[in-house]
Length: 230
Image (cartoon, rainbow, N blue to C red; front, side):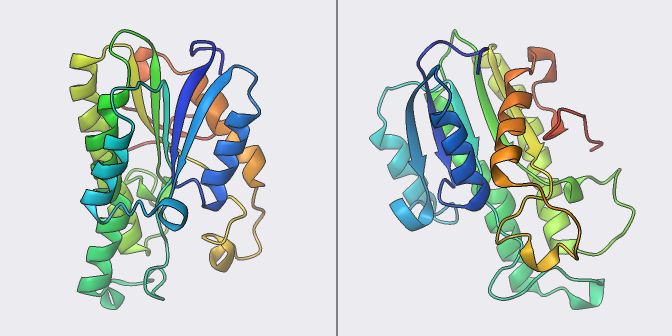
């Protein structure tokens, strides 16, 4: 990460998942990286659906600052329910949980962890989203709850980025689609299509983030740096 200071500190939230753990490892391999804080539900009890756990973990970091933050939380299948194929299949409670996990959860992470970004230096906050959250790119339909939750997440990122720019003008907050990565999340839905390895996806995500400019704050990008329609 050449755009960040030597010895930059980072936080990866969702660091026990397939893509989150790969991103944490890619940062560890960066000779310019300093401290890496890895947080997850399974290892640390940070549950994005329970705000008090997010608040408590942010509080333990005190007045320290971090130049790189990654939010790699999310779920496609919830309580055994995968993506719907038609509107008649939606379930109120499952749809609400999709929003809780994939939209509200990351919003709570932003609320409590954004204050740890430095005020006067360049910093990056990457929230992993999904291309299926794009309204303009939706040509297949289906996956109503997951699509809608990710679309809401993209709006949260965009809106919050405007607020962030007023207090920390050198900070950049974006949503990035990691691609179809070979993880347990995508395994049931790959349909025989090629999936990229987590280590490759993580390197590309970090490379894309590293090259962002302030003018791209609040944007929605693919792992390869290409812009995605809202």
